[in-house]
Amino acid sequence: MSSSNLPYRPRRLRSTPAIRDLVAQTRLSPADLIYPMFLADGIAEPREIASMPGQYQHTLDSLKATAEHALEAGVRCIDLFGVPRDEDKDAEGSAAWAEEGVLNRGIRALREEFGDDLIVMADTCLDEFTDHGHCGVVGVDKQGSSVVLNDATVALYEKMALAQARAGAHIVSPSGMMDGQVGAIRGALDAEGYTGVAIMAYSAKYASAFFGPFRDAVGSSLTGDRRTYQQDPANARESLREARLDIEEGADFVMVKPAMAYLDIVGAIAAFSPVPVAAYQVSGEYAMIKAAGANGWVDEDAVMLESLTSIKRAGAEQILTYFAIDAARALR
Ligand code: PBG
Image (tube, rainbow, N blue to C red):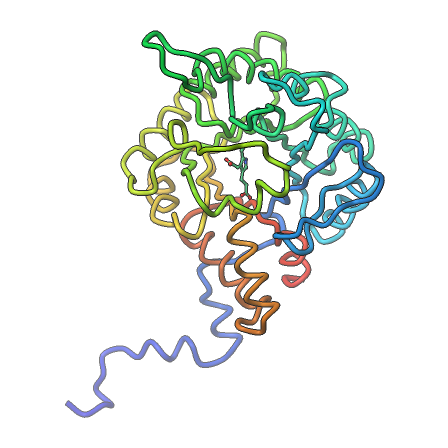
């Protein structure tokens, strides 16, 4: 067969930038991006996080200024984490639901400053606030083993989510991987009339080494690991079940975390989910790209956009990423 008889020539549609753009299946937009930020208590100046170059523990002022930069770049959603002072941590993480707790103050300040222009999402988990660093209450089960107690923890998540709703959060995001957390939070919010507050459920959250730099970012007190509540990286099937349960319990979004090493999970959940599917490009993913970029080993901006494009192509409609502002600017 001579080459002129080829039945189809896929290169035709790759021949010019305009044609490539015409047929691009995945289009990344600043509106897809959610920017995670850290508000720290008791600091006078923002502090750069050593393992996450370009990311900061913020003061209230630098939080508001950076949120403004995000908006200017077209990023309209912030995911806020609180970093309390060590002396405010306790066994239950009570600073998480204190009206004047650092995270709740941050939510209130962002709402006062930006109204509904900026979507304020809050992390709904206790690990930043507990003195042992676990995502819930450590106690002893019926057989005498030390465990993170599921139902006692979920009761505290309800209080935390309510405090976040009162502070003005548009979205709460339970990330502790306790069973039944989404339904319990939905019930607590509805019972107090916060029917308009949405829930982004961390549905498939893996016990991942890619969270390493985040533990620096929040000054985590954790020793040990989270393998009794976060998922085993070896498993795919349970992610589908977790997402189904969260949807039944009232999740408005389901999320997969981390992103790049779990794109099969993103794709599998996107194939059936009736609610939007998000993915979280976590601290370690960011740190690796920044480090390789700083060394000149990869083109940082190109890898940033390629990684985000691949997460969207896999089926995520929203992407939480520390690159949000940089990516949004690059997309303009
Ligand atoms: C826990 C939480 C973690 C992250 C977000 N929420 C860390 C963990 O589970 O240990 C990780 C985020 C990141 O690595 O960027 N509430």
